[in-house]
Each structure stands twice: as structure tokens, then as C-alpha cells.
Image 1 (cartoon, helix red, strand yellow):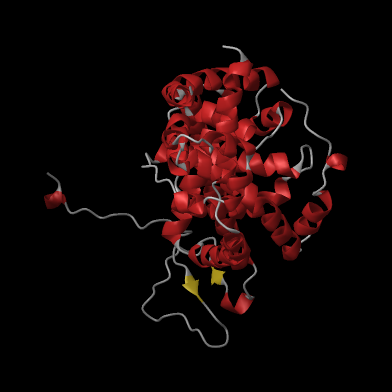
Image 2 (cartoon, each protein chain N blue to C red):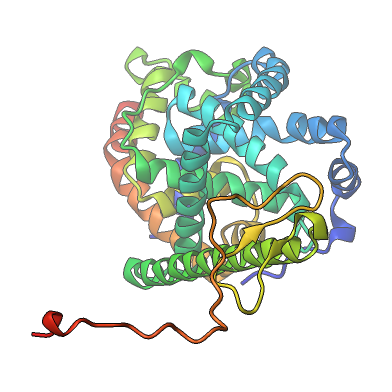
Length: 204
Length: 162
């Protein structure tokens, strides 16, 4: 298992201590800081914006209630991510949700992303991939993964969290993180093979 | 499969980071969170909600522990059942102790009552009467029996013997 980070390295430790002392504004600062990142995590796990909104409220509520038990043995960031992952997994186990993709909520920044430019650019109109089509295909492929594999893909491939931190969040070894990622990548490659092949065929 | 072969797929997956609501959503999120907390506080007083909260807390703990330990359900269910029995046992024994304590308090109170209002019980009488020098007179219909005296012999008439 990955070594937990010391509280002295934790950039949030002062806010956490103030919040533990009863400073609600300090906790508000933590909410503002982590709401976007946790939204991404929960949304990609559930693929449902309404569920994400409700879950996010519950996650921060639970974090607030449990804050007194946070001892600083790990970073606050790792701790709150653990809460978010556990609550989301519990939610997914309780309910079989129909995924509803919210394509309207796509940040305009995607237009400048090199990967998107590479995918969507072509002189051949047949190759012009609609952003919705790409996202739909990706979502289907990711949702097809098991919850455990989906979690590591989201944390690593989407949120860019290093292996060691993922291991700390999930309470597993770095080796387990790597092996789950490897398996998940294999699955995704197979699921997206047709899409990749049609993409290559058109370009030639 | 080489990881290099996955690079293009990985690039596509990274595009999912753009699936996010606008800044406005997050600006209002804190306000919504405060409303959620207030709502929670109001609901916490309801017994039904308390039961539901307790169930959810136990279930969340169970799932979190199982997820962490990767143990089969039956082993954790057995632990949970054992824990429940222990908690129930402790609760019942604490209730019994309360009852005992209450009984002790009662007896303590009765022994510390003022003499004028005490329950008088003589060693030789079979009737307990509440006597008060000031206001409570022994009820006239209560007959004081004296067990100290030898019982009167029972006279049985000859014709009553069968």
C-alpha cells in the first residue's frame, strides 16, 4: 500500500484545522476548492448529472460531519477523495442507474485540446467526428468496465492523478492500481477498436 | 498490448475532462450545499429519519469495510450480527442497572423521609399504619393485630370433626 503523505505536506492542513475548530468559512473554502474535481469523479462514475449533484452534496455533508475524525495521517485531498469514491460505489451498488449523458455540459475548452483537434480535423467530411459521437462512444466503453476498473481509469486517465495517490485513495497497492489500469486499457482498446479502425480507414 | 498503442485511446479518454458544467454551477454549489445542510438538520429530529440515517450509516460502514478488506459478505455479516447482539446486550444490561439504581433511590428516599411521615412498622404488629402526630390519625377501621401474643386455641366442637 502506498505510504500516506504527512500532514506537513498537506496544503489544506490550515483550512482543515480551522474548520475542525468550528470555522465554517474554512470548510466553505475546501468545498469551493474540491467541488469541481469531485464533480468530475462522480459524474464519470455515474454518467448522470442529477445523481452527481445529489451525491456531491452528500459527499461534502459527510466530510463535514466526519471532519473531527480526520487525523492528518493522509492529505485532506486523499481523504475526501476516498469518501467520494466509497459513497459513489455504494450508490452504484444500491441503484442500477440508467446513464444519461449531459452533452450540453461540455466545456468550450475542448475546442483547443490537441486530441480533439486531431480527431475532428479532416478535409474529408466523412472523417469529421461529431463531439457527441466521440463522447457517447467513450462513455459506453467506460461504463462497460467494472466499477473498480472504471474508478482507476477516471482517476488516472481523466483526472491525471498519479498511481501512488490513487493507491492511497483506494487503499490498495500501487501494483494493484497498475494492473487494474492495464486491464482496463486493454478492454477500452477492444471496445474502441471499431471506432479507431473506421477513423483510420477514412483517413487513408 | 503495448501502452504506446493505447496512447490515442488515452487521448480520447482525457477529453472527458471537458464534460463539466459551467463555472456558474460551481458558484451556486456552495449556496446549495448550505441549503442541503440546513435541510439535513431539520430532518435529523424525525425518528424515521434517525432510523434511516442509522441504517445508511451502518450499511455504508459495512460496504466500506468490505471494499477495503475484500472479504466475502458472509464474514462481515457475521461480524455485524455479533456486534448488534453485543450492543443489544449492553443496552439491556444498562437498562437493568438503571432499574436497580431507581429501586435503590426509592429505598433511599423512603429511609430519609421525615419521622412524622414515616411508615411505622412495629416488630410485633402485623399491620402497617401510617401515623402522623400532626395530621394523620390511624384509620379507625384498621385493627392492630398483636402477633406477639400466643394464638388463641381453636376450639373445635365435637360434632364438627369428620
